[in-house]
Length: 427
Image 1: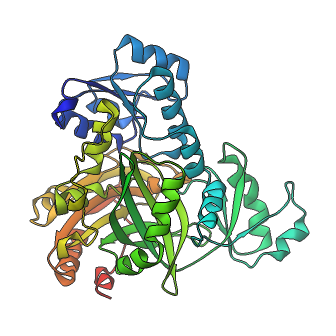
Image 2: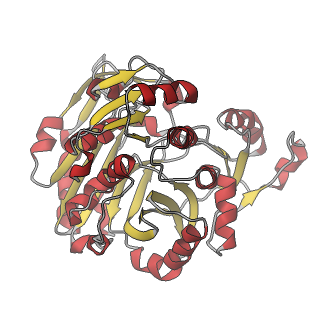
Image 3: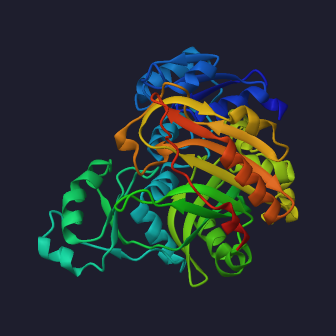
């Protein structure tokens, strides 16, 4: 994708994962800028140039784009930044993979569910109450229920409520995480989970991957967090028969042209039930596995689009294979307790293992994981990407990695909580 060479890319948001975008852009020969209002944003250290302009200050960002002769703009991983990304692209005439309406549909959980219903795509049952609510309404729920802000991501502001008093005490908390002050109340489901990935290139919608999502319960009222994805999903064929065509039809109905999407879904009695969508780069970094399997890299395509207006797929979409060419892959996520990191051990040894594609750290020594990170993806300290020829071989490799990695606090106490029997992927 040499068209990106020496072009300038501005990334909105300097979170640790933005380093992935920076590395992709630099591989393609681009000069990379990062901006947000934080001096210590992790990715600013890797950019060619960084700025202290907030990602929501559109007027100041418009001036920055002009002054620095920026060629392209991109953000990823955080739903809340997408509207500002779209507005900035529109005001500066830069390429944007999404329209304001599409972003609204896919960042507002209520609007997304209503769209799914139009196409007979199953979604999680929900409950409705007045605001402010009458306490008597709470007795009509079939507990447990899930309280979540309608327009946030990453697990922020979500609480499992097993009775009316828990609901009442957490309602305003969930509301505070919603920019639109809307809260979604859903039936809480404990079931197997899958995540489905799509790439859109000039209006062509391609299923790129589907993985089984393994989670760990940490506390009773906190949603379980992912500790691993296994590809390909054992439900891939069922999904393709039941829902794939409906989903493509739904995406086409709102005019999707470019970009990438992920959908999170429960599987209940062999049926996928959608509960979340993201029209953006995702923290699972599944593109690393896809690229290893078929040589096509969705992240590189997103960067290329931002700089050239073209995803750069060039009619190669047939190379995408959600079956992963009969190999097996995993994204292992390691979770840690709140505290200050004293040391992360084993990463060098893990990198040297034959079947490890990459290891990505979210934190470094001295970083603090605050108490309010509990129940959010901010508890993920590391992701390890691996592949194998067979499930049993993969399980053995994952077990080896689990034994190698350790994270301790400043007192030498263990911070890792992601204990998991990887042999369960063989089931």
